[in-house]
Structure formats: structure tokens, C-alpha cells
Image 1 (tube, rainbow, N blue to C red):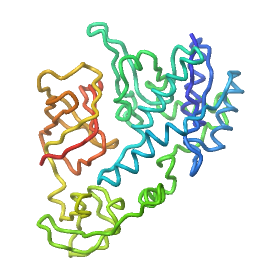
Image 2: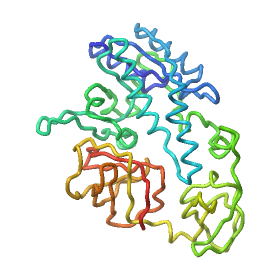
Image 3: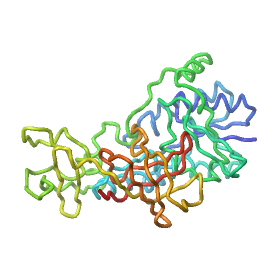
Image 4: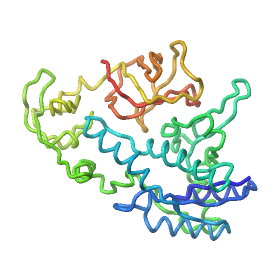
Length: 354
């Protein structure tokens, strides 16, 4: 079988290529060119292209780069800017996985006759004979588990995707890379959004299409004006630092209202919410949730999943009620539903009820 290996230039994708070749696959390494301005070693920089090519040369497999920058701008960067301007906080890595790494790469795999694609994500895929469905499972290493950002995988995609690192630790991956003399064995993992390497998200949004943020009012939940903000793109729910408002005890952003161009501040009591709704849903374990179920739900990548009741109330709408109120659920972020180690599905937080 022929395998397309998504080669980012990092150590994880390099070991993925090594393991797939050892399994007997006819491998080709493909590096995605996602953008050119502000490119970092994580996505589209010259250094990662060179590192990916060197690893492929060492493994004696072909390597090529493929330009996905037009689709990346439309599906990831445009949505990133739109979400911030609408008062939400986007998760571009999820959009990139959904539209680029799996949809885009699988379409390209078809054109070159590749049967499967393999990436360096830390997660596991198994086929359940009883349900006749593919399942997405957490990685065995909780510290590296990336199942949260992979919930959009469909049954067809799961059947053609391989995650060779799902049962490995990062230390094991690096040790294997050093053993084989890979140039990127100790390459640092990037923690930044690849197209905003300086983490100035508001600055990026302002410069993206030349539309500057408009200052407005900081207000209390009752509407009392506390001061002036720099523009809603500078803030996210739960933020405490950088507000420039002092009232004797810490203030937190508890709501962003794009229609009134207001940022609501409180002393923290308004941060905790019990019920949220998600849309843009993708379910892996079922075609739909016919009856309310008890599950565990994660509302941020580093958030520990929490007990909740999950109720599908529309074709593209799920209501999630947590057993205990959760701190700072945020519009635009993903809520991912788990049953133990298994990903049931997930969606984008579109409404916060209370």
C-alpha cells in the first residue's frame, strides 16, 4: 500500500515516516505550504522544508512540497479574523486539521494513488467490530494527547488515516530520532499559531485586511462605564491582564458584545457557566444522539474534561449542561465529547446559556 506522510519538518512527522516505512508502506513525504508571510518552522518556513527533505533523503523516500496557501487563507486565516471580530476566540489548528491536513491531503493522496495518509498526531484509531464504526481514541500519553483537535475526522477519513505515534511518548519519539540520526531529533515544538508567531493576534487581525479595531467601552454587567478598551479583538473571555482598569480587586472579561462594541468586566463571578450549545458538529460514535447521554466534555485543549449531559436538539445543534459550572467557556472554541478514552464527537461553541 502507498502512504502519503504529512512531513512538517518536525520530529513527530519524521518518526511517523520511519514507522510507516518499517511497516512496509511505499511512502512519499509531502510538506504542505500553507502560507508564506510570517512563516515559521511549524508551517511553511524554509527551515522545515529543508529538514523534511533531509529526513526523507535519509529514509530514501521521495519528498515534495504542495502549495495549499489559497485554501489555508480561505478556510483558516479568514475564519480566524472573522471570529475575533465577532467577539469569539478562534481555534485555527482545528480548522487546519479539518480542511487542510485531512480533507486537503486526502484529496491530494487520491491524485497520486496513495491509499492512506499518516501524520504525527498523538491519538489512536481503532475499528469497532460490534458497532461497525471507526473510533478515535486518546493517545496513551495524556501529556501529548491531541484527540481534542481531531474530533472533526469522519468515518471515511478515519478509515484512511494512520497515527503511528498514538501509543508512544515524546521521549520515545526523540530517542528513536536520535538513534536514526535525524537532523530534527531535538527540534523544539512550536507552541504558537503558525501564522502569528509573535502572538500579537489583535495586531494580526488589524493588519490582515486593513480594518482597524474601533475603541469602545468597558462596562459592568449592569452597564456602568468603567473606561475605554482598545477594540474587542484585543480581548478574550477570562482575560485579566492588560485591561488597564484598577478597582481594588482583579477584573475579568466575562462577555464581549460586538454589536455594542462593549467588553463586560466583572470580579469573576460571571465567568462560570453551566450550559452551552455547539454547532458545526461532527459525531464519530453515532450518526446522531437520539437521547440525552452522560459524557465528559472538554472546552479547551488544556481543559480537563468534565461530567455533563449531552442532548442533541437539532440537526446541527447540541446542548451541553455540565454537572458543575465551568470557568470561561468561550464562543468560537471547540467543545469535545468523550466517553472514557473515546471521542464521541464535538463542535464549536456558538451559544452560552447561563
